[in-house]
Length: 419
Image (tube, rainbow, N blue to C red):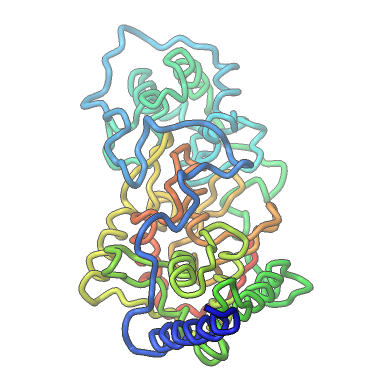
């Protein structure tokens, strides 16, 4: 065959393929998706800057039966607890032990009363409460022996503290008999003002994440090796995607899971343009920021009622009660105002579930990088000493859909900016 004819036929075939993809994109049928394989790097490896500890012996959202069981009853002790109260004072303020006791409790002079939390009760006068040594020891070792629904970490059962160290902590608790003395109002969690984000997140001179919006627009228009771009089929993004992101995530029956924007971007781009924008990669993040920014000001309205979506939403709701990690926290333990929500855990404010999604992806000023909501889910696990799941995990999809339902009516404002 002559070279000229090959070029002509190639152009015809390319045009036919382009027309087919364009027709699929413009039709009311399901969007083309790559249905096989992971949308994230596989096998998944934790981000290099994150803690390296392996906590696979404790619960994750995918394996909620891994942790050691709770005691069925308090342990009987042979006699009074003897311990080193001075060492106990150090242990309760030891940030390397999962934040330790001071993360949730005011404890008199412990840690110089430096930014204690208030998720748990003030223990500054626990020495006057009349609690015996056995009760105190068991409550520190594993409070589930008395209260199965407690949000207190099982310090002994999960081996954060040894039995000897728990004896030291009990010895210190018995010395606490007067209110804490704070150096400033900032140290008093009852007077500490909740953080209020007042920066203009859509000002490129304020929010460095605005570069991602520009990069995303460039990627949308860029022709891949296939000759196709997003714009080839979808046209002007400002019109085509003005409200689309506000309805995400969504149930995808072909994959039997919930798709967030980041996973959709990978699977749809791969199927149509050939681009391989894996989740947590720069291109994927930029596209997610760009597509969401096009819907800024739109109220979130994810479908949580249709077949498949309703069940996923309910699974997501149930996941918020699953306790994970060495510290044995659930989502609700930290974000339900009836538990730890709207309180301080050391110097960090624990917000409620509503208001936790409309600004993602968001710029993290303390890390100088953009996080999408799946990376936030991953860090929530790692921060409480649980192994994270890959960002395209089904459990994260269900959780994102549930959170979208909780945040229905909130207006998108992306990229966000948070500490």
